[in-house]
Length: 252
Image (cartoon, rainbow, N blue to C red; front, side, top):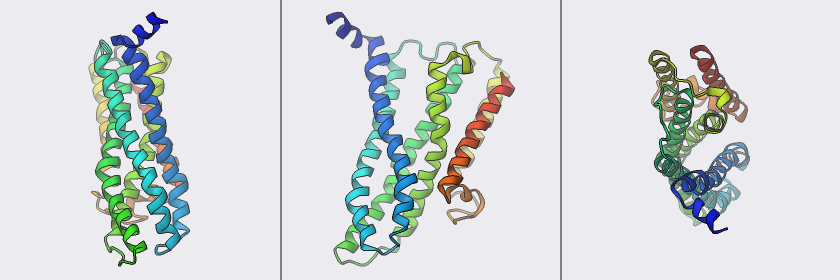
C-alpha cells in the first residue's frame, strides 16, 4: 500500500495518475456544462421572452452558479493538462513529425482557444447579462448593452461546442490509441501541410465567433448560420471533425 502511494506521488505517477485524474474530472464538468448551456439553457431561456421576470430569475439564480463552475472547471482542466505535459518525461519525444504528437497538440490548441473564449469572451459578456438581470429584478432599467453582450457570449459558446467535438477526439484517440495516428514519423512537408490547413480552419471559425468577419455578429449571415440552432452547430462540429480525419488520411 505504501509503495502504491509513493508511486502515485512520483514524477510519473503525478502525470499518469493524479494530474490526469483531475484533468478528466474537471474536463467532464467543463464540457458537460458547455453542452448544458447550449443544448438546454439557451433554448429554454429563449422561451421565457426577453423581458420575462422568470428568465431574469433563472439567469440570476441558476446561470450565475452554473457559470461559476463552468469557468473554473475550464481553468482547472487547462492547468492540469499543462502540469501533465510539464511533469511527464519526454512527453513530445520525437517532435511534431510524430502523428500522435501533432494530433494531441491539435487537441491542446483547440482546448486553449476554448479556455480563452470562456474567460475572454463568454464570462466577460455574461457578466453584463447577469448584472442586467439583477438590476431589472431590483426595479432598475434594462441595460441596452445586454443584448449585444449576450450575442457575443452566445457565439463564442457555440463555437466552443464546434471545437469540442474535434478536441475530445484528439485528446482521447491521439493519447490512448496508437492505431489511429501512430508513432512513425512523417515527412516535414506532410506535417507542415497538416498544420497550415489546421490553423487556417481553426482561425477562420474563431475569427467568425469573435465577430471579425464581414457579417460580424449578425444572425443568420455568413458562417453565423452554424450558430443559429443546436442541429446546425452539431453538423458543423462533426463536419470539422470529419475534415481533420480526411486530412490525416491524405497525408499519412
